[in-house]
Image (cartoon, rainbow, N blue to C red; front, side, top):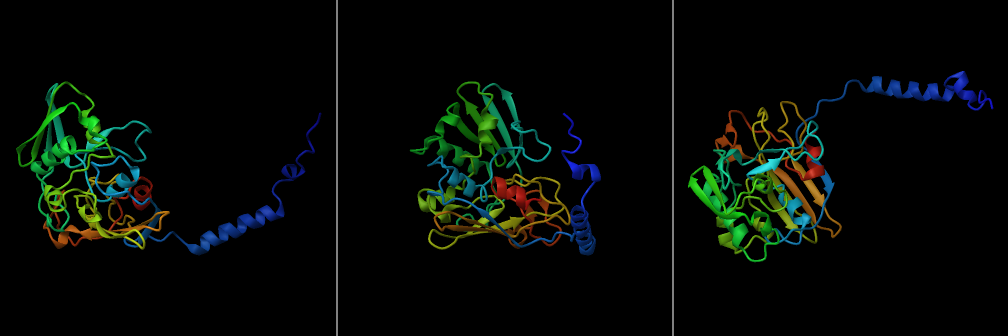
Length: 307
């Protein structure tokens, strides 16, 4: 059977209407000119969830972990980005700049120097040390009710070798330990002073970490706020606590991120500058005025903010 006349328009080429549509679109693009250069600042609004509480060692709720990803950092993390194959789970440094395994039951992590806690009491912007890492994982292994403790069942003890070196001593060989420490659900590094002050980490006020955002306000019936912190815009590294690289000069950024939940809770993340209270960022001296840019949002929000 012949199909020569099944599509008469195709045989005659595009219709007048098609040409008109194409012309209008092309004209609009020419009139608009080149796209404007992105500018730092602004608010990124995303849909989120209301966490049951803020203690990463007392729940496995993704609602808590997603929220805490704005605030905290880990020793290691899984690399992400356009060039990373899906499902590869490659490791990269976060708070630890490098690590080694001298034998089958020992892992040694060397911390970045100059990493500072948020400039809020009781830590007041002091430097992160190996004692903080030791405290975090000792609490992880000993606090009652930790549903994820089994992840580190192979760990016998955690030692602070010196100010910037942490050693994990295992009871048996376990090659997956670095991947467990990069787990996005519960392995955030927490400050001992905060636990000592509040007794646990369930209150919103305890969300004090080394990540790029700080808590500004949290209200289950109205709204909440998070403040952000910056590193030099020229830094070629990815900053701890983020899943997107630090944008280069002229890169787009959001200075504040709002998350609203189905229960009318709103959380606002706003970047703050380390330069206001520290002369050194976690990647080196701050040699120029700090600027705001986007990073540190959980999963989908991070990918949007970092573009």
